[in-house]
Each structure stands twice: as structure tokens, then as C-alpha cells.
Length: 305
Image (cartoon, rainbow, N blue to C red):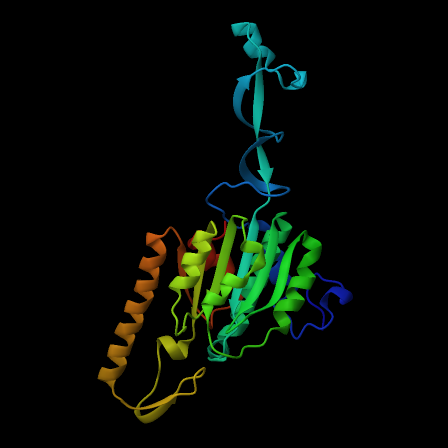
């Protein structure tokens, strides 16, 4: 099957459709929000702290010999009898990095969390590519990869979707493997981590590293209904989907109440950690349709507009 909007060659090898053509058409009115201006590498749609030759006025400076006379403000000269050159805000691209947790726990739930994670990554990647930003993507488990190295232009969307469709969930979660992303060596940008955050080593290492690399960080926290509102009861043996360790428990209403309280506290802990560092935290239900998540939840959270 081919991916919507991609040629047969672009979509060859894709394991499944990420979303239908109707949803992709609805993305046309959205764009990714980057809160901080930064210098990019190529012309794009983002404001840059550099001064260039776009159409948006930024400032004046004194005329220097050799400056382009077309940039002289003749109205200012008529008033002040001094030459000033108009400066304009240069529009540059932004590097958008998409990190998808591909550990074994992401395959849990009905539907699996991993499906929505890849759909969200595909939608955000498409929006960035359509907005003339550069996009990179990687799967995170106990290693980094497969990788989608930085690319630019709407024509690259099919290749990104093919990579995401082919991902498989497996292995333990080690979000710290984000350190291996080669494109983060010195390029500020926007980094989106899509995960259930069930990581033995925690999530703070990944967040701190991305901030150290001058990334604007967005954490999208996916949990299945079975995790947020379990309907369990009686004597059970629970098996960790990643470590395969088991524990025997007697599930009572009081145990479920304590579980829900601890889950809520854990989510608030992540939110507080992110907020204190200027990052964005968005909890999401894995059974929500991708249209509801992208067109509503991410817009309300300020990730999209």
C-alpha cells in the first residue's frame, strides 16, 4: 500500500498507512510553534536573530561606504540629512528533531501506543517539511536508530513516512540514547520526544542533554487506557513487558486507588521537571484518534497553531 501524498517509489516498503489523505489535507492549515528565534542554515519561514533581506523590517544602522543604495531610507535622510540603511529580519529554517520511543512497552495497549507515536511523528515531520524546516528523526530503545538524517522539503515526507512505518517496537527503553544523534552536535532547534517514559534510567538525562544542545524540548507522554484506568481484580502475576520480571499482587479497589494516585503524581513530576526548564509537557491517551491529538490537543498545548 502507498502512503497518502507520496509516490509509489517514495512509499515502497512502508508497512502500513500512518494516516489517510483526508487527515493529511487537514494539516494544511497548521504549523509548528517555535518559541525562540534562532539562526538556521537556509532560508525558511522562521524568524532568525540574523539580519537579512526579507520583507519584515527589523532596525536601522548608519550607512557605510559600499552599502547597497537600494536599502537607504530616503525618508529618514529627508528629515535628518543623514544616511541610514534599513535592516530586515531574515527568515531561516529550524531543525526539528523527532525522537520516537520504540521500546517493547510501546507495543502495549489497545491500540498499541506505538501506532499513535509514529502517526504523531509523521504529522509533525510533514508540517515541518512543508514549512521549509529541516527534519530529522530517530527511534529510541537501548540503541539509537533507525535514523532519518536531516532533510528539507515536502518531497521528503514520503521517505520519512516509510521510515516510521517500518519501525518495530522492541528492547528496553533507554531515552539517554538520544545523546547519539549526530545532528545535535551544535545546531539549535526543536526536539520532540514521543514516549511512555517507562524508562528504568529515567527521562531527565535525555531532557537535560537536549537542553544542553540548545533544543526547545517538547515531551509527548503516551499512556494507554489499560495504564491510566486498569480494570484488574483478584490475585494476579504481572510481567514487565521490557525486563520480563514478574510480581504477584492482589488487586483490590484500594490498590487501584493508590495506583491511580501514584500515576497522577508521576505525571505531575514530569510536568514540573519540564516546566522548570522551559520545556513543554503534553500527556496524551494512546487510544485517541491522531486527528484529535494533532488538530486539538497539540494546538491547545501550544505545540501547533
